[in-house]
Image 1 (tube, rainbow, N blue to C red):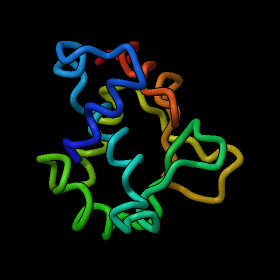
Image 2 (image 1 turned 30 degrees about the vertical axis):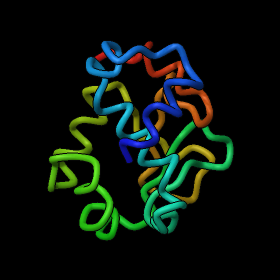
Image 3 (image 1 turned 90 degrees about the vertical axis):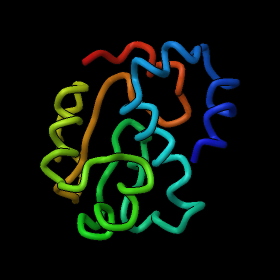
Length: 118
């Protein structure tokens, strides 16, 4: 996944120092962007409007995908990080129960990641 960081930076105004301060959001953004490339689109995906993401298969997500990007091994730890970074669970308009949203975390808008704070 590290090979995608320069591409994301080229598409945004993020600097390496800003990325260092926001490792969780950037890693999560990268994870979502390449989920389909790695064959994980049935575990994790952007919602159709790109303003939220959904965890479709918690077990596969935690066992197969999370270890590639994060040190967390428990879903509770992962959701704690989501909460720390201002993500909110939402079910409005979605048929899934694990949908997360942050106003600065939007598909195709990596430049907004610099607005995220812990």
